[in-house]
Amino acid sequence: MTAVQPKPTAHSVGETFDSLSPATDEVVGTYPVHSKEDVRAAIARAKDAAEWWAGLGYDGRAERLRRWKGVITRRLPQLCQVVRDETGKPIADAQLESVLAIEHIAWAGKHARKILGKQRRAAGLMMSNQAATVEYQPLGVVGVIGPWNYPVFTPLGSIAYALAAGNTVVFKPSEYTPGVGKWLVDAFNEVVPEWPVLQLITGFGETGAALVTGGVDKIAFTGSTGTGKKIMAAAAETLTPVIIEAGGKDAVLVDADADLEAAADATVWGAFSNSGQTCIGVERVYVHERVHDEFVAKVVEKSKDVRAGSDAAAQYGPVTMPSQLSVIKRHIADAIERGGKALVGGVDAVGDRYVQPTVLVDVPEDSVAVQEETFGPTVTIAKVRDMDEAVEKANDTKYGLGSTVFSKSRGLELAGRLRTGMTSINAPLSFAGIASLPFGGVGDSGFGRIHGPEGLREFARPKAVARQRFTAPIVLTSFSRKEKTDALVAKLITVLHGKR
Image 1 (tube, rainbow, N blue to C red):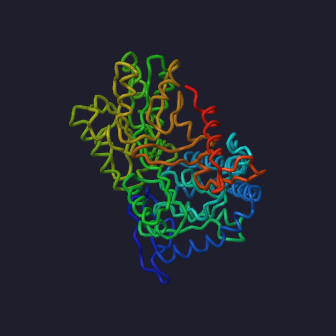
Image 2 (spheres, rainbow, N blue to C red; image 1 turned 90 degrees about the horizontal axis):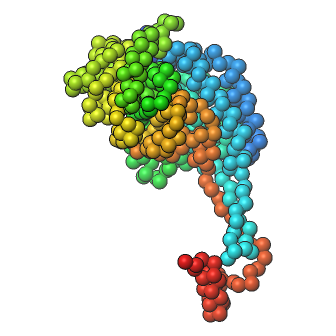
Image 3 (cartoon, rainbow, N blue to C red; image 1 turned 135 degrees about the vertical axis):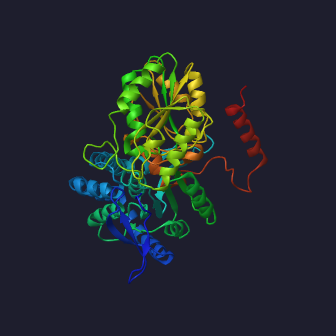
């Protein structure tokens, strides 16, 4: 988001709003506020285009997706500059998220046929005269509502998979990053000029609400839990299915045998990169008492070299959404007032645009800094007697998105016990970069999955077909069925399934 809330302005052909640089408040673009009527018209166009796009088949769509990722790749510096202009993040971070997004476009196009194409299923002995198949058909039109913190990687995790599955897409980016959304859609339309397969709508909450209720076949939303609940309520009126990827309060577990250098480095990067504005970022750390002090010392030392700013040497940029500054400050203040200590940073680390790194220890588990999503460059570190206590505390949250475990001997075991949609072992957030792995959470972190086979299936409906190959000697689905037939069926089912 930007340092100043985008404001709508009068325009000769309707309302517009400015996208502003969060570092300077400079206007970097002006975009229309699309009305309810505009959104419905876009959805109607998408419905008209859906049959053509689905008709290209897996190979035809894969070819267009390959060309799209080629355009993005060749113009990567240009895209990264747009991301920096609208979010303030360093060019290198903009490139990282864009590179990961390109990988996802490639994976979705390449694997859609294998995952969604027709598959044979066993019919079973009782129905052995039948041939059983299942295939996944496109839903039609998918509405995607994207976030501002990763304006390339996150929405493309839905858009690319929805397109590969044969759907058309109407995309509403955040009002803080409309320029990134427009860049991506314009690039796609260069390689798919025939029909409006991927369309852009811009505006505020009203525009997003119009998309939810406008007649799309599914909504994929990334954002806050509160907004996700409102979208679900609105979508329920028309039984429109939704995917919700909401917030997180992700934890890192550091066992006694962990590589402390790697764990500390992962904690610092996971907590502070992108100014902490990462749904799967590190917000809590639970460390075995035997290595706690050494680990904390390493985190403190590494944190001293990390700085927010707009210059080329800064590791991360401004807090994009102005209202989040007060949230971050409140969390830090509450932690300190309740006995916590700021070993790096503190309340004074929160400025009017930038928040410098803050490392908190001895923070009570029921404080807002531990229980609520901070979404800023802060981290709490707690000492635990063993990993059983670490798992218990890590799971004591309404969220359940990502998590990380550092342990040489118990990584898989501990990962399996964490109530999260994803866990990385001995590396930070690696699950997000693996295109074949599903991405999503539980609890207040949402439901449904993007990425991987599960992500492709989210944007398709399963179609089951049973085809009779020959007439069965025993006809069960007829009023002409005889009593002896029923007796034979009872005897057969007893032989098949009645053993103790």
